[in-house]
Structures are given as structure tokens and as C-alpha cells.
Image (cartoon, rainbow, N blue to C red):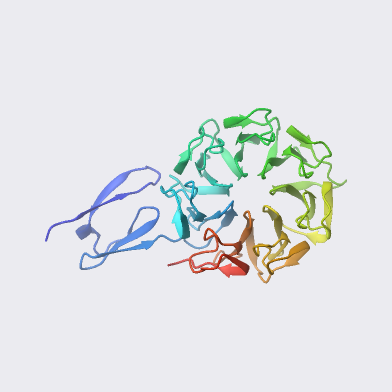
Length: 400
């Protein structure tokens, strides 16, 4: 019998290529290419199955029409829209209903999904981005790429956040931003397709929204960019430089979040304030009136907040509540309506929640389950759904 060689590209830490013979693989460990597993049985026949994330799942992030999870081995798996190569598996076009492994050349500590791009922080502190590059959001010019590509000009990165068409990263307590600056959202006063330093120090958290950005620096919240709906937290038209947000007295900001046209901050006591566009009740304040200044969510506290295009979600004691637009079921308690105050979902014992444009996802506290709900036009809700949306949390299959 002739010996058939199987060449597999293994993009690991070494970025090497190796060759194996099927005869050598009999009874051995499966060979993976970052997206599939190839098994050889005793007769030399092969079967190909999609790779799957290893439990426990640690973090979920969501973007325009795609999402990603960091799994138990610190690898990144993504699914949903891949029209610009934002899934990072070396392919461009269409959508993926089941997980594909992003070809990040090292283990991952943090990730973020933007409109049509994705970024991940490697354990080494190197930042990688991929997907749509037309606005410079990848930090490497304006060309689309479908595999994770290191971002030059910034190192020792600890956190990353991705907006519709721009990206920001925290490195050694400094904030760097790049991409679209159509509304001043970079905070540097000029457009840049490579990392540009924002004039802030001691930055602990940053959040990139639709066309605005917010950060916590030196214990204060600052925002900049488009302010058409008050999302920067002031009465001025807009600003291309960090501008302090007037949070309530005694509010010690621990984190900040940015959505399509609204923003929220959480303090060290888990109290939440929000401001900006509120046409769909996405501020959660019990009305739909726009707020140019931070307004407290009465009676609600949360350990984590995530903002979508026109909806918001929070976690309190492992329980998820969402509010705002639910035209695609993204609030998770029914579709076709809006909710102007936090509305509790059926999910409990949850550790992580993420909001995309019109969908949401959450991970169980033990990392053993993943749910998504809302828009499904790009298969954001997983491989076993054929409906275009889902108004209740849907448990995604973790194997196929």
C-alpha cells in the first residue's frame, strides 16, 4: 500500500509547518489545523470534524454580527459573520455557525470584537488584530486580513476594546487608539491607522463605542468623540480630546462601557449610571428621555455591564438583566418591544455577558455552558438554529 502524506499547517507559538504520514497517525493523537481535527482510524481512513473549545469557557465577547470565546486552554474560538475575515481562521466570506479557532500564534489573555474586526492580546503582551481594515482599525494600515496579525507600535498590552471602526488598547497604564476618527473618537486630534497615544495617564479601563470612546484614568471617567445623543456626557456638540464626565458625588468609577450611542459606568460599590441615547430605553432609567449627564439606575447594581447598539445587559449576583431595544429579541425576554428598566432573564449562575449589535451572549459560572439570544442572521446563535432570531437564551452546542 502506498504511503499517503498529510501536510498540516500548525500555527502555534513557533508558526511552523510539519508533515506526518497517515500510517504514523494510526492510534495516535488527532492532528489539528486550528479549525478542524483530522483523525486516522486503524484502517488508514480519515474523518474531519470541527475543532471545539475546551471547557471551562472563560470569557465571551461580541461584535457587529460575530462573537468569540476564550476557552479553558486560553485559545480563541469565534463564530458568526466572516464577511471581512473577522473570525481569523484564514478564510473570508460567508458565516460560520460553529466555532472556528482563530489562528492567534500564542495563548490569549483578552479579546474584543468590533463591527467587522477582532483583536486579541497574547500572553506575551503582543496585540493581534484581523478582519476589516478599511478604516485603519487593525493598526496596520487599511487592508483587510483574515488571520491574526501583530500590531506594531504598541507592546505590553493588557486590555483591548473594539468599536464599530476603531480600536483602543491599554499598555502600561497608557491608552493607544487607532482607526476611524470621523467624530474624534480616537482622542488624539487626528486620524491614524497605527497606534496613537491618547493624552491620559494611569488608565485602568477603556471602552470603544460606535463613534465615541470612554476611559477611566486617574480615578475619573472621560469620554470623547460623537456627542449627538449626549454619549460623551456633556452638553457640547462633540470633542476630539478626552473630556471629564460629571459623575455623581461619591461615585468612584471602577469600569466604563460604551454602546452604539450611549455609555454607562459602574462604581466600586456596583452602582450604575448611564447617559446618552435613550430612544429604546437602553439607559435603564425607567423612561426613554435622552440624558446628557450620568443618571443613576435606581435600585439596580451590577458587577458587570455590557452595551450593544441600542440595548444593555448587566450581571448581579450571577443573574443577568437586560434592557433597551428588543426588536430582534436581544433583551432575552421577548421580541418586538423595548424595555426601559433592567429586566431579569431566566439565566442564573452566570459569570460573563457580552452584547453585540443586536444580540447577546453569556457564559455559565462554571464555564460549562454558553447561551446567546437575539439576532441570528449571521449564525451568531450557533449551529443548531435555522431561525433568524431568538427572543430567549439559546444554549449553543459545544461539540458537533
